[in-house]
Image (cartoon, rainbow, N blue to C red; front, side, top):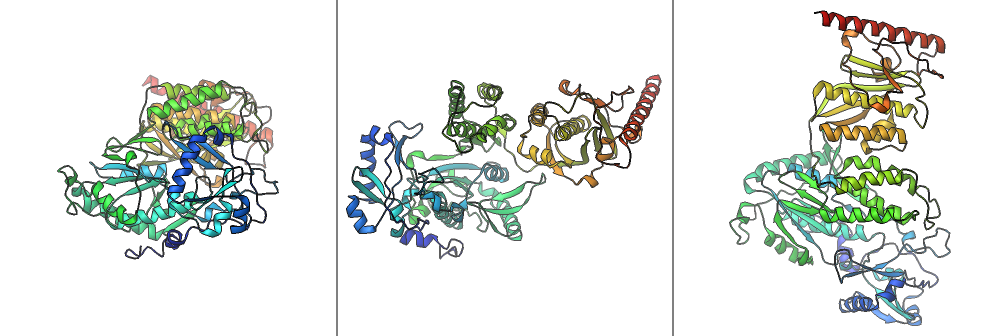
Length: 635
């Protein structure tokens, strides 16, 4: 760290490794020893094997009696242990300490995690977006390899002052001192992550990279040597942008670097500052003809990692290639696609099937299924609109998380959608990267009780809200979403599919709801579902931006102030579900009056006058459009 001037960037890493991490364990006044979970007794043999391993590595000290331990370190607190089989690893088990026990906020003995603010222990996380943008920048022919660090958290020592809060109960009157970070401690990910960040920066300083990590999983990218100069030029440009935007940012428990904005408005969030150039290390060691084509190989990683003492789990190594698995997804660097692996698809299908076999569920069960399906939304973006009822369900538990409850109606229908998707043939999703965003000055708006309007450049179109549209949860937010949908369909009609369009609106619920891809309002969410179908079938994408109402040109047509007929946008077919509630303003028919008309503007007019004005405008524009159409037919 001194060699590469990294001490100022990671001021606590050397102290942590030399003296142990201080994680915020409080002063404990009274010994508290809750029982372990039944799984410890059930897997007694596996528990003993785990303990013997901990003794052999001297991470556990003991066993001690309660009296002996209190005489040595004073009052202490244990957290319930449990043993869980590691998924897809027969015969392998993980020891978990529940440092969040007791879970009740009113308990007289608070949990260890209650006292710890994990956000003060930040580190970088290679998120889906980070990975996608990294791959998008790679030159053709690049490759990636993956490596796991063995027993990552357990390689970080704890300061002796913290041991009172990490005591392990191993028998009726037998206790061990756990001297290292544990799975379940709130700050473990951040403290270990900062150490891993420092190690990654040292690797980068040696010329290895790009590198992305998620906890103890690392992905190493390598590029062809022929692309090195141009690739480093790109890194230098990104570094300049990062410095310009304030270098490292801290949000929650995450560090990230602001490298500017993409054309679609997304921030480029990097997990490094790009200060170190990638180097050609091909002369550092002997290598195969294939490896000599690239900037470095696995031997170069091993050479640097050995000096740092990084213990790799060699059995998990994935050699360099063009397809890599990371955060549970399969990334194809050459094709620039990401897919949900088959084993994950099977796992998620089984989770849905198990869910549907029961009529009631606890909060933990809801969270478990929701987390799986939310992860799948990286590959199935439309799935966000089919998670809303699970989101509502999670909010229904309040302070009774262990009380089984019945899910909201139509939850099964949402899960049927997911089952269909997971059973369908695997389709890789394009990795989202920099795109060309088309801005046609497209705006949409809705006026309560009146209508919908859209403007594209200098052209317009309007629709009248009719019938009992304000029913079954439909409100002005729904109307705004419909206006956005009609604008999106119009843009495809005008400019064709397979494009990225910027769409402006003045309703934050719609603008920001579309960023997430869903809405809490079921009727608005149905609009978003239709739009997701449009995206999937046409390849068009829509990027919403907020504009204040006073600067929204679609406001006037939404209120019946209609433009000249020669600037009328072409008609589009209305979805069947909209026909009872929306009528095209250009149709020369008498409109049924809404039982409760109102307008957002022109308050100086009476309701009757405003409605009459709107009707006259509808009749005028309808007659002009019919006349223009007849003239064209005659010609």
